[in-house]
Amino acid sequence: MRKYEEVVKPTQSLADITCDKCGNSCRRDLNYEFANMTAYWGYGSRKDEQVFDLDLCEDCFDIFMGWINGGCLRGGISTGREPSSTT
Ligand SMILES: [Zn+2]
Image (cartoon, rainbow, N blue to C red; front, side, top):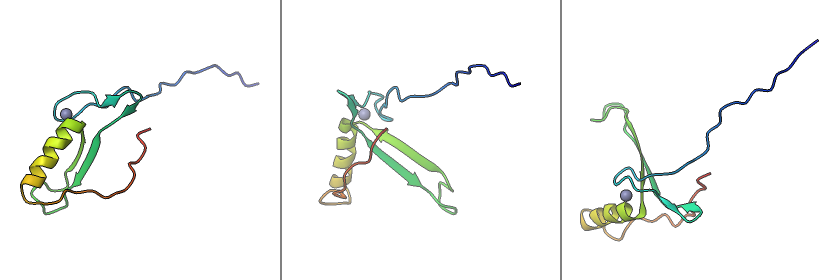
């Protein structure tokens, strides 16, 4: 005979996404609006296999893009692709 007991497993649900620069929430109404940037640095680089994963709010993203566009790149960077889901 097997006896079973009910077990409640802890689960995680997304509570918020905060900007890694300013700390503000990226929540807008029912969605999150943010830029996710990932950098992988390989073996032999100065960062030697470090991975950076950043979430930026729209304001901080605009500052970042202003810095990029005002610096070495012109015309902005846009893939024209639809954003992926955050769920
Ligand atoms: Zn921010």
